[in-house]
Length: 403
Image (cartoon, rainbow, N blue to C red; front, side):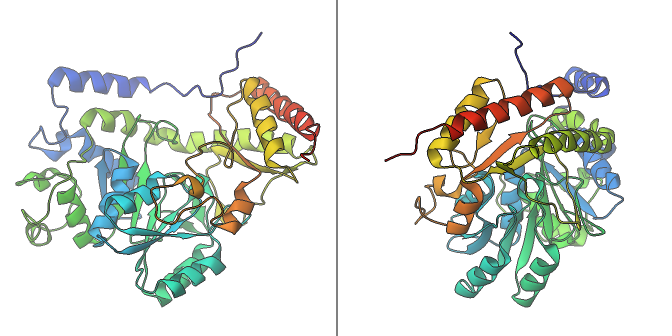
């Protein structure tokens, strides 16, 4: 019997492995070990990361995780205890967790059937919470919300946008790179992202003052700010020296080396994901029970995961379906089955969260399935996945109706 592996990841390029070995032999693991910034792998990664996208932004800061990047962004904007922050109800638990960890209050905005921010509910939540001045906008699973309307609404209400682009590195909305709409953008290099460094994150901005705050907050004590290739003038930096508490969220040179060597591979991976996605979605669409949201012509997504919905499925049917597909070796998940960390009703650390909260998001996620794909999948994997899904649907529709 074939043992199917749908989670095999690409090996780290030999260039990165060699560089990590060099770093280990030198002992210069700490990003500030060398006095010269050009000898710091983390500093070089920050520079190359911005150059990869045509220099669309001025400043980049490499940190130890995407969650840290979000927390630093919120802190730089002055978010603190009791402040309200708008957050999509469909995102990963790490996003509202960053708000909670600053003792602020997440105000969750519903998602629509297209997995994007429900614009009507965004306006409602702003009207109900006029004191909220930050929207932590997560491009969850790479679905890009209507950025034109969101910018218009936020500008009219004096709301600053942070883009959580962990799932949208290399995505576009219209003719604009995702990550350049907000005042600050954050990225993740956790294992299942397009750049796999195990952990790691990046925060980017054009604002020198915000960058200076984040630079010190992540752990540039004393005069270590001088060991960055990308930095504002000393007049901006020195006003924050010794004025802000440190979080020590720095990226190590080893993590930077692992991530940096993958930058030239990003475009090729995006194309490989697209081919895999098209193959699988074309196959899934053969089954009348499968519903796949249509992409907006204005968005160019990074298609490293698949979401589809099962028409008229009950909770019992969803459970039977997921159990069968997973028994076939396909790691498909359902947002509404089990303790999925992407379902807002499971975020019990937020006050007032209940199983019946967020009716629009419930409708969007109740029969929605989710699966990451990797560039290591081949035609046989795709065909096995499709057959497993179709067999699971058949088993689910045979489930007796309760009562």
